[in-house]
Image 1 (cartoon, rainbow, N blue to C red):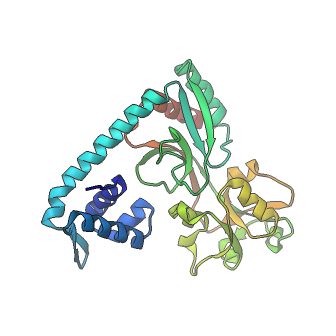
Image 2 (spheres, rainbow, N blue to C red; image 1 turned 120 degrees about the horizontal axis):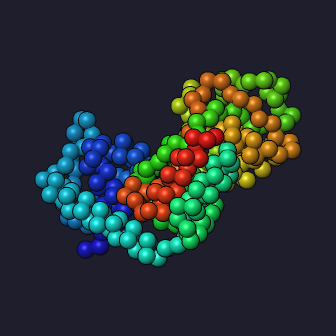
Amino acid sequence: MDVHLRELRYFVAVADELNVTRAAERLFVSQPALSKQLRALEGRLGYRLFERVPSGVTLTRQGAELLPVARDVLERWEAGVEQARAAASAGTLVIGLQTAVGRGLQQEALRRFRAVMPGWEVSLRLVGWDDPSGGLADGTSDVAFLWLPLPPGVRAYVLATERRGVAMPADHPLADLAEVPFEALADEPFIALPPEAGPLRDFWLAVGQRTRPPVIGVTASTAEEVFEAVSSGLGVVLVAEGNAELYRRPGVTYRPVSGLPPGELAIAWRERDNRPQVMAFVDALRHAATKV
């Protein structure tokens, strides 16, 4: 019988939450997709893993018996992957980036990292917004600079907390304001991250602060695509204050926005990845952040 690790992860997440909706949010997948995968797993096993109850779901006797086995398989697999990764990538730390970092963080951290880990190389890898883990989930990055909210399975240290503002065409009517109330943007077309970005897409659309769904002008997968769309007049986009400085370009204006919680930039790594080179880089960034 072939069972995929993804199905086991889904099973364990639902067993932890005892609620399919909360498990779907934790896994960054849609509820219908999660339910479909669980039904497929139960079909292959030949028995039910969950029963529905008013509060969500509860484990069947078979599900309760299978749960510790599933946890053990996942933990052993992840430990083996980390060991293999350490053997295969010794000497190179891969850093996933979704936007430019700037803020005086990266250069200072790299200097400290090289002093602590002499002989180690550093490789920077650009990752699209369609992978909210910045390459951590599939192992193509060892650490990644990410904006909160974070996907499951990672740990993080917040490096910067910054006000959010709006980037818009320079001739936009709201560009005359020194500060834009978020309510004034309610009917504006927004540049959105791809749906695969999950809660991160919702955060940069400020879905939690809206009274009605946002208007999507275009979807973009990279920072360059985002700002090209803005300069082309296809919509506006929320950006962190520091990124507004990093992505200055002709035809685009930035204004702070009132009524929004700030954005948080973090360095992230896999939950059980305690390799010396990973911890050394995280520690280097902690020191760099205190100097900014």
